Image (cartoon, rainbow, N blue to C red; front, top):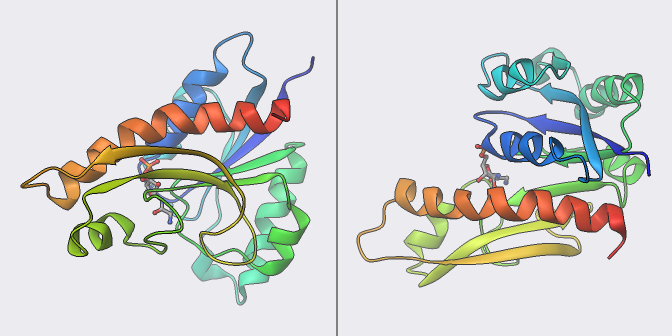
Length: 191
Ligand code: GAR
């Protein structure tokens, strides 16, 4: 069967992008990454895309008058690369309802908490501050409501005594790199 063409949106380091790139190297993995888009020109993930020979684009959100205009630019690039599924991988911008509707059922996000707990941009810090004994990560389909939408995969990690935001996030990242490729495969194979 033909591999599904995936676009990955990033804002930073892109370690989840790397996990997806690595998974796609396997001949029986059902996806290939055909485009990477970053809203930040200094995102390290752009180097990862270049290293893997994947076309990438920078779409600086500040240059667009509205959220929708920014999303339309990205949507045009995704169409140009014949993208069929979009994965958000540390993409730290809210998407417009128009974009979310257009990609409904084909738009995945990874979030560093056990959703529905600790939504938002500082999930790891918030879990620590709340004294959570356990944290983790969630891959879900994106809907209009922030960090909500049907869950595809989740993994749990303990919060250990003395954890900092960094040490906890590192533990969560290791699980993210495992479940994101698995969740994408699951979506494609319709499990
Ligand atoms: C990941 O932990 C991801 O779950 C989180 O940003 C990090 C990006 O890491 N996303 C969010 O917080 C979205 N609300 P990466 O750039 O190394 O993949």
